[in-house]
Amino acid sequence: MSTSENFISHLLELRKRLLNSAVAFLLVFICLFPWAADLYSILAHPLLAKLPKGGQMIATDVTTPFFVPMKVAMMAALLISLPYILYQVWRFVAPGLYLHEKRWVLPLLVASVMLFFCGMGFAYFAVFPIVFGFITSAAPQGVAVMTDIDKYLSFVLGMFVAFGLAFQVPIAVVLLVKTGMVTTAKLREIRPYVIVGAFIVGAIFTPPDVVSQFMLAMPLWLLYEAGIITAGWMLRSSKAADIH
Image (cartoon, helix red, strand yellow):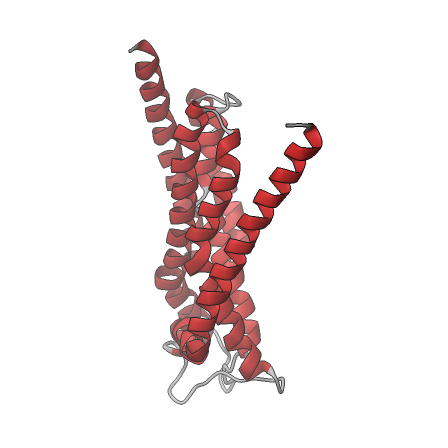
């Protein structure tokens, strides 16, 4: 097969995988769309539960009550279809990988998705109640807390991304060790700097209260330690396999 034919076959395969991913996303979105408002209510529950009695959220634009729940449905559809989309990505890249690369790339890919979901869940169930409780209690006397639903969605998505990425720390640590860019001994040596950096990241990506900053910094540190332990275990397993 010539170079041009090989290139065209790769493009056709890529188109197939992208089409499969798009169809999966659209099918899930169509199924979720009738319940878009309910999905937004679930997303808004952590804030609504902390509002004073009679408190509510508001919509400042004419089209916001329609488009914001639709965005939530799209986000939910993407999360639900993400495993299948990543499977399509894997089917596209797997033929180009060596056997030993396939052995650790696929587990890391699955672990990365699971950790991202865990980060989102941690933000929703653990961080949001504390953050919104602090924000509503800090409102001056006579000020009604009525958040715009679009701005609330932007805030929540930002927090989801921040915590989802924070929970990728073990994956980053394992990749650094696996590729030989750094050793586990060096990672343990720079631990104090990592702890300081975790609290700086917590101060940047969370509201200005100590509790929420601490709740991002501590998982970052603990996940860093988990990454070191996992990387060390993988190295030992790899050496044992080479011996046998």
